[in-house]
Length: 206
Image 1 (spheres, rainbow, N blue to C red):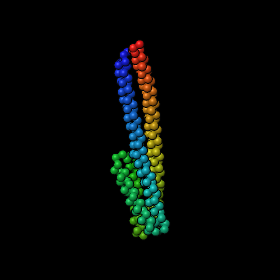
Image 2: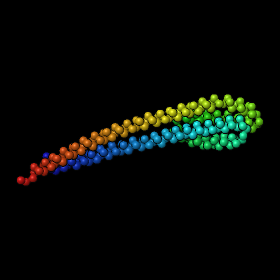
Image 3: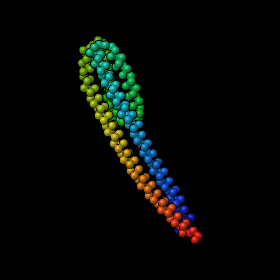
Image 4: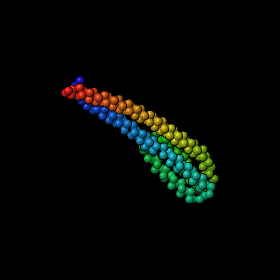
């Protein structure tokens, strides 16, 4: 084969190498973005669950403190936490990516809030005994919601972990394939360069 043909082959392989490497680099970049997306969207939901748990516990504590000590400062804490919880729940409910399981828990939490508001109504009327009795009946409901929130949080975490492992495995496969192709193409280019050198030496006038 003439030197020109060897050069043509070398150039073609070089272009092919660049295209293959660029393709794998693009795939690797998309995979990295997938990981970032998992961290962003899933962990936002995870953080929201943590915040809701915090607001729920603080509101329940405020009601217990109000009934136990009849200190209206607990009302300020309750309404403050309720406002923050409402803003968060509204943003979660309006997010189309929010899982239905979390929406269901928000609905159940709303039912508990109605009961809590009724406790406050009874308290304002001065019927402390009725308010306390109602608050006690709501304790099991609150505990169940908190346990379900914790279970949902764990489920979200496990789901994130599985997806990250799958994505990391995909990156490992891409890196192995990329390394193998790079080594193979490098070996072919070296062979072609050797053949070009050999052909040039052979055609050199004696």
